[in-house]
Image (tube, rainbow, N blue to C red):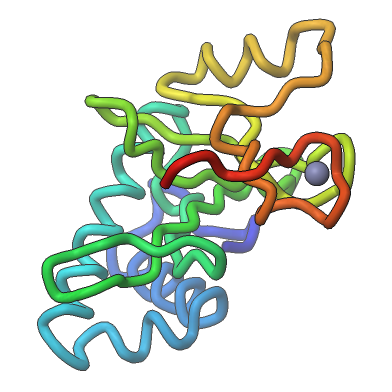
Length: 170
Ligand SMILES: [Zn+2]
């Protein structure tokens, strides 16, 4: 998703072709194979909805949101596990990338912001977000070092990191 995206004043055709090029560049496998079978198409369409929902919640253009396979997490379905959703938002004004994963413990639409573990630098869930204000509060406060409960799973951390705890039960 480049910063030179045509604005809303551009024609639909121009914006559509730009969007296709951006997807092809950012997620070649997901884009090319989306028609391969019904499961892939359903995942593609579901991810389009995920992108629209988080774009609305965080007040960014949906063309700034990319939802791809999460290399670290799976999602259980009736037909077996499929890759989870990794949501990447490119901030148009700074170019900064923000990554989120779905928060399945929230009954409405919620996400977990991914960030660097203060102990080992691994990318872990750091805070729950349902609205722009949640992200703002997280960024605004004088942090005590904090990670989301989901980030305590020691398999997410480098060995010996004090923020990782052995999984209980499961
Ligand atoms: Zn860690």
